[in-house]
Structure formats: C-alpha cells, structure tokens
Amino acid sequence: MTTTERADKRWRLLSTTSALSAAALVAAACAAEGDEESGGQGGGEISVAASTTAWGSVVEAVGGDHVDVASIIEDPAVDPHTYESTPEDGLIAAEADLMVYNGGGFDPFAEQFAEQEDDLLTIEAFKLSGLAEDGHEDEHGHEDEHGHEDEHGHEDEHGHEDEHGHEDEHGHEDEHGHEDEHGHGHDHGHGVNEHVWYHLDTVKAVAEEVAHELGELSSEHREEFEDNAAEFITELDGLEEQLHELGEAHPDLTVIATEPVAYYLLESAHIDDITPQDFSDAIEAHSDVPAAAQDEVLQAIGNGEIDVLINNPQTDTPVTRTVVSEAEEAGIPVVDISETLPEGVAGYVEWVAGQLDELVAAAEQ
Image (cartoon, rainbow, N blue to C red; front, top):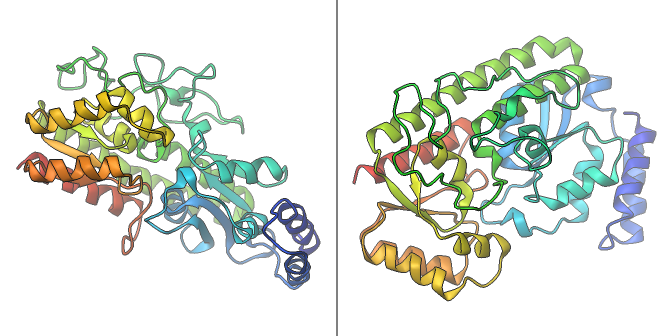
C-alpha cells in the first residue's frame, strides 16, 4: 500500500466518524504522507488490526516478529458486544494491511470497518468457521464445518472429525466409545454461538488463513508463517486433549453460565450446561432477564444442582452479580471465562490453558 493510498484510505474511513473534527482529519491525512510503506510491500513488519486481543494473540502466534498487531479492544473490562468505536480505531483499521475480527454480531464495529473498506484485506472468524446458518451445516449432528472451501479457494485441512476421533455429543461416540449421557445437546436452543475463539477448530482455521494471507503479503517469510501456524495448531491439539480429559474425569459435571461465552469449551468437554434458554438469551441481548428464568437459576444454585458457575466478567449486570454472589454463598466455585486476554497473559494458549486449569480445579472441589 503506497503512502498516497494510505492517506486516501484514512480520509474515506475517518470521514464516516462524526466524532472526529475537520482539523483532526487534516492532521491525519498530512501525517499519512510521511508514513513509511506497509511491511507487506515495502519491507519491515506487516501491520495487522484485530478486533480484540483474542484474535490479536492468534495473529501474533503465527506472524511472530514479522507482524505489528494492534488490537482495538485491549481493556479486559470492556464488553465487545456493546463497544462503540473511536476515531483512533478507524485509523488502526485504515493503516492495516490485514484485519482479523470475530464477526457473527460479536464485534459490529469491526464488521463496519470491513464493509466500509473494500480494499481492506480481512479475515472473519465466524464466517470461516462455517457455523452460521447460511447453508453451512453446524456441528450439531451435521457435517463438520471445516470441509468447505474458504473464499480464497483453498480447502481447510481439518477434516470432518477432530484428530482425537471425537464426534459431537448428540448421540455420537467419541474415541472412548461413550455417548453424552446427558442428552441435552448443550445448546438449549441458543442457536449459533458467536464466541468462536473458543471453538478450537475455528481457531485452527483462522491460524492457517492468517499464515496464508501473511505469506501473500510477505512471500519471503511464507514458510516461517506456515511453520508457526503448524506449531500453534499442535498447541491447540493439547488444549483439546485437556478438554477431553476433563470430560472423562468428570462425566457428571453440571454448570450454569452467566453468559454463554464458554459454550464451545463446555461442548468439547461434554459438560452439561443447564442454563435456562431465556436467561442466556436475555443476557446476550442486554435485555431484562425474565423473572422466571432468574428464579430457575437461583433455585438450581440453592438446591445444589450445579457443580460450577461459569461467569463472563465482561458481561457484568446486576443479575449476573446476584447469581455470582448466590453461588459463592452456596459454596459453589465460580470460574471466570473472559472474552479478551487479561493483563499479564502472554498469548492465546496460555490464556485458554489457564482458564481450563481453573475449571479443572473447580471440578475437583
């Protein structure tokens, strides 16, 4: 991307942001003329924008020292669902060679940037997952999502069954020959869950796509990107095995979640999530939780029907605070599963593994 193109891109993106003054627009455009060319075309680091640190950490694992990743949401206290972008966020997207975002309605600000900029190279994780109800069949008793070709025409190498031989919980056997004894299906009618950075097959697919795109931008480092992605995927395999071991060690583990952020992790471990659908739907929609659904959750806690409460600390409401408080008073362990990396956590695998360790410890109490 040339400096002229970069300046023009800034003008077009920032002009859509009413919060930025005309004086700031002029300053941004003038500053653009002095920028160096992007790493992909003129040497140096490749500039990558990520909607959150979850996807930023995946890019860093693949790109290594050859990428400069700017995550728009870095604050672990921010709820990405309701985040309102700033002019500075627009500049991050405008200056990027590549943007990686979640999609599926999770980070609409990033979807807006992608729609505004036809020449912005993007990777949408939710679309790549194939989980959307748009003609692709999801994982619930249907065809595995990684057998289709992506928009670049190259097929995902992750076959229809994961490397452990595990199939989904809906009456199918895993490698150990046991079915999900609960028979709940774990989705309780929630539909397609957008928290796909915890869907490890999707993370693998995104890592491979990142390696592909980075290799297109910097061909001299293509092999290194591919090797990094392969190493990262091996580490993800370890997380999958950790989940399967958790499920095997605690086949009767039952949880309620304040928000369905951990849906795919619980599914992989065959953990029974008995959260009422109306409760989850209301929390996801940032609307009032029906009294009956809240009572059902509190009764399950009071009656000792669950072993662990899964809490999303970034979806904090009076209702979720009440649920957490009641669980703590009842002696039920509370495990926080977040939407972005906490401060002090170095990378994706460390982040997820740490949360799984906490879940294992809670299950063993």
